[in-house]
Length: 243
Image (cartoon, rainbow, N blue to C red):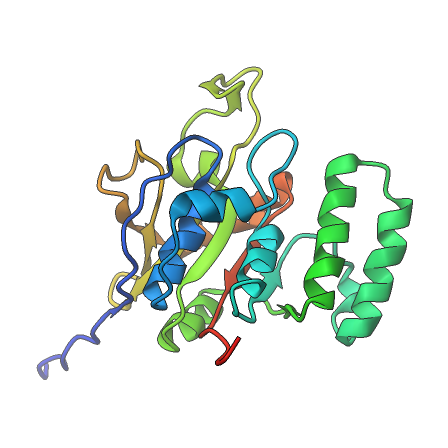
């Protein structure tokens, strides 16, 4: 047998490590990481203060996108859930999507869902982009290969393999899936694992907050993020010049 060729070097973006200051600020903390990656320095406290929060705690990826627009970025969201967007909307232009979201916001009765739908309409009105693509490892690799880190809202319960939570305590009987934000910042070709930067202070998978996850497990955790109104990828791209 002939010798194997050289191993393909991994993709690894230099996303700085941050720790979230409390259990509900993973989203803004991840946003601060990505801002710094692109050369934008801003106090974490200010980013937390300017990011809309859910009444029950935490935030949504779309709110992070809106915050990024205010700082000169033109973010893109790749949604995979069915709570906000309908599969028949995939070919609609932004104005038609805004119209559909406005109509849906007027009909849903769940306050969390209503807030999410309205936020997406605002995101599009402000110039944010929504792209519908299949949730595959190739999609994430293509984004990373362009030099863009990926913020994602996912199920920490599934990602970590821990018990569900009730009132911020592990409880496998009364608990619910817990939403969380991480930054996907690399990919190892030979192991088919993604590199994740996690702002949680007590990450079960690696105390440093930087670890690798099998592609299938990461994608399933992202899809299960639909239970907390996320299941999305959020990319910021480079800041718009002179903004």
